[in-house]
Length: 272
Length: 199
Image (cartoon, each protein chain N blue to C red):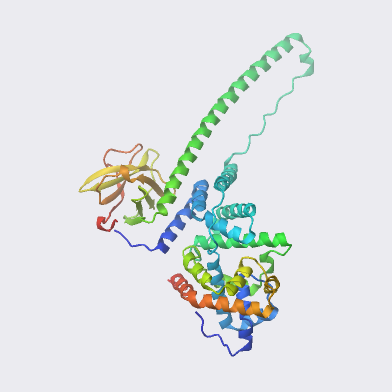
């Protein structure tokens, strides 16, 4: 805190309310205040502290629960905006050649043209139906993925806000991460970074071990060298003191077989 | 290896997670951002505009803006909460000014104030919420009222004087005393933030 404000200086004394009002957002300060601030380090320091205080005041209102629909509305807006960007532009329409009018006047040609048109319509309809079916499957898969992601993040949010949250730093040669755990929530999460690249037919597999015996916690693929896996405590072994991550064939292995990318001990006595 | 982790580190770790998610998986990142800070953002917006519909719009704008401009967020400069609430407060004040036919805040900011605002280390308003709120509530009512009318109500001191039917000089005195008392009781927090920033 600055205690060196020159109280005997009438200018400093006089502009204290201006400094407070400026920090709180009143922008209609007199020009002489700006002039004084340019030449007075003590008042600039005071104003900086008032601005810091004002930033703290933003956290003080009574907490009000927003309406339940707001969360979904915001997420839908984000999905629409990010989804729109990902949609490829529609292909340019194929130009249709117009038949020569003179031929259409001939009855045989007219029948052949009508049959060809019917066949084309039939094929087009089948193609549309097939595309619609594929789109429905993709949409169902995407909806299922979004629903799963929401569930995961709901668990993750509860986990991160749990009063009994404990976590462990995991250090490897290159890869490192954290293991988060809440007994109350019955959930844990492993987050990793600086993972090595995976082949298409590989996954990272998480193991929990003690005395050389390992139990799988699940697999993940990661992205851009980072990855995470959400776990239910009830699915983990009762005793373990080590977390290990290995590279395994897609689908995972019964026991660790691939290269170890991360391994670290957990100190049980500090796990409350 | 286990490291004792403070609530501040916990908050930083959580912010890192949110930022990474916002960049890589927008929907999930925004869901986590909203679940973590949506309530306080909504509360700040409502505190200013006093209108649930407008508070919803502002909250959506703030969360979307945070997602769109996450590349400009500087973790070393402030916590994600401070950044978010700063956007929320300014957006809500602009809404209020728009309703009153006033200029938006950015148009009125003086150059020296902008420079000082950049230099000031914002207090982590979510982590320190309880402490700051306690000190604010411990101010004499007359002083707190003036501080809040300027900060949340976006009133000038002259407008506060008219609203409270007191002389302008009285408003000046209450404002100075209130802010000075907050500075004395919370000054150590400001300096702790500065020390951590330097480290």
